[in-house]
Amino acid sequence: MGSLARAGAGLAIGGAALAMVLAAGGITYRAWQDGPGAAVPARTPGERAYAVEVATLEPATAIPTISAYGRLESGRTLELRASLAGALVELGPSFRDGGVVAEGDLLYRIDPARLETALALAGTDLSEAEAALAEARAALELARLEARAANDQLALRDQALARQQGLRDRGVATEAELETATLARAAAEQTLINRQQVVAGDEARVDLAAITLERRRIAAADAARALDEASVTAPFAGVLAEVTAVEGRLVSANEQLAVLIDPTDIEVAFRVTSNQFARLLNDQGALRQTDMVVELQRGRQITELPAKLDRAGAEIAEDKVGRLVYARLTAPDATLVQPGDFVTVRIPERPLEGVATIPAAAATADGRILLLGEGGRLEEVQATLLRHQGDSLIVTDVPFGRQYVTARALQLGPGIQVTPVEPAPAAAETAAPAAATAENPAPAASAGDGDTIALDDARRAAIVAFIEASEKMKPEKRDQWLEELSRPEVPRATVEKFETMMAEGQ
Image 1 (cartoon, rainbow, N blue to C red):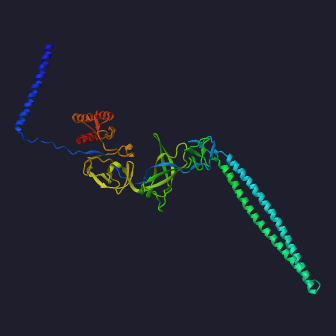
Image 2 (cartoon, rainbow, N blue to C red):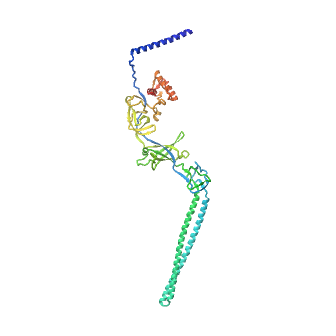
């Protein structure tokens, strides 16, 4: 039996070889008959219809958003500086970088010994000035009494002189007695003038003493204020930063010891272009006090903080572009935000009515989009680009109600035959995907969508060979597409996508 089996196998191989020789001879004979210049008949392929996702242009009201990057700043920051020179004899328990203090808490104390001495000397000088003023006032009172007495003496001398003149006129008194009365009256007048001069001098001394007393009071108040300034307390609740003070260290006047930051008064400073700034203004040309959102990223977590536009910068720096704008955070969380954090701001513009929002991949850079025309052929129209919002565009001057291609590709253009495919619900809510490549093919419609075709073995094998030969495709993607191609029916979009890539040599 073994010999018969081997003989049968030899006959089969010999028969196959003879058939191949005969086939080769037939091919050679036909080539000889046709001659070297015979034309090879070409096949005329049918027109390819590409599957494209389409959506309908619907008029709506859109609210564009301006996005910018900024930095958090404190709206109230106080530099703590030494008001006088001296040694630091006491520091508050929280007087360190990052220390949290409440309003009225002790921050630091400068050695008060010299200040206490100065205050004591100022008090002594004040007492001395008060005594000098009291003495001057007493002297003035005595001088006034003496002036009053001299005035009374002058009045008596006037009466005596008048009596002597009457006696002389009657021949009773002599000229000598009249002369004596006249001299006495003149002496009394001179005494009154002297007493008035003393009163004037004493009044001036009282004024000078009062001025000296006021100066001493000012000096005493200044010494008391200096003593109070030796102990510095927090004027408001906040967090300390840039602390350089050490207990026992000598500090000079006006030396910065720390910075006190109010964590409840935080604002964000950011720059926008001139065009964006114009969109933030109201009809009167003033900045709109609109609500906005500040996004703070901590690792992979993004926290949205409410804020409100506050004001614009007063000037434009020479080395800067755009306008500087400030927004104030609404009730910021001191444990979450800190001055210096970089954030993203999103400011809503005024609504745009009668516009359409389309994926950015649906239009060219100058705003041309493809519409689905009669017979499934594409038409191209020019749209007006109003805003670029991430992966979406806000456009106008488009034929509302018409269907458009959501993602342009190199093989698509006016007049191309296409098969429209409605986008999946999840895809309709997100931006259109990028053009398909061999490394990252675009996701195709699933078999459950109903748009599937049955492939013959040759067509299926060609696509499988292309996928397996691709060196750029990720292994997980390759396995996904091979599994999809192993089904009896394959989504039409998948087949057309890979056949397009094969034709373009991708």
